[in-house]
Length: 168
Image 1 (spheres, rainbow, N blue to C red):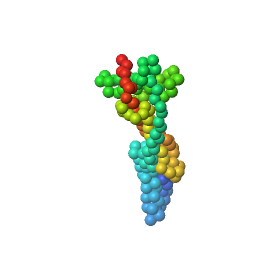
Image 2 (cartoon, helix red, strand yellow):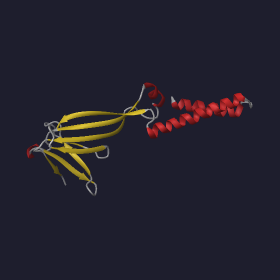
Image 3 (cartoon, rainbow, N blue to C red):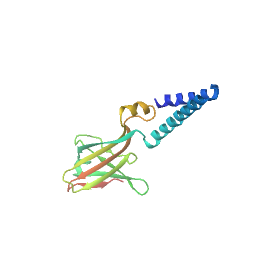
Image 4 (tube, one colour):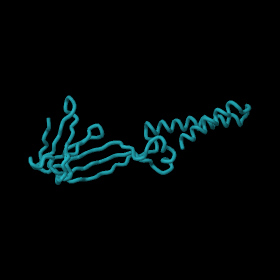
C-alpha cells in the first residue's frame, strides 16, 4: 500500500508540474504530490531501518534438560568458537531419547548458564518484530515481513551435580 501511495504522489507531482497552468490549484497539487512522495519514501525507510510500525514480541518456552552425554552423568557440553573462544556453542538435549544433540547459534542470540538452580531446565526466549495493528500491516506489508526474527536467548538452569564440559 505504501508503494502505491509513493507512486500516486510521484505521478501527481510530475503531471501537475508538467501539464497544469500556473495557479493556486497547481501549487496545492504539487505540494500534495511532493508531501505524499517524500512522506511515503521516508516512512518506508524508517520502517526498514527503525522498524516503524512494529513492536517486539518475545515468546518464552521452557524445556526439561537431559544430559548431553547420558553415559557420562549429568553433563552440558560447550564448544568454544573463535580465536579467543568467546562465542560458546552449547550442545544440549531436551529429550533423553533423542539421538542428535541440539546446538545454540551465537550468530542468532546469546546463551547463559545458571548453576545451582532450583530445577534443571532450558528457557528459550525468541524475539520477533510484529506489526502493531492490522492497518500498519496493510500499509507496510510489502517492506517488512510480519514475525521477522530479531533474536534468541538460551538460558540453561542447572541443579547442583551438573557439570559443563568443554569440547575441543
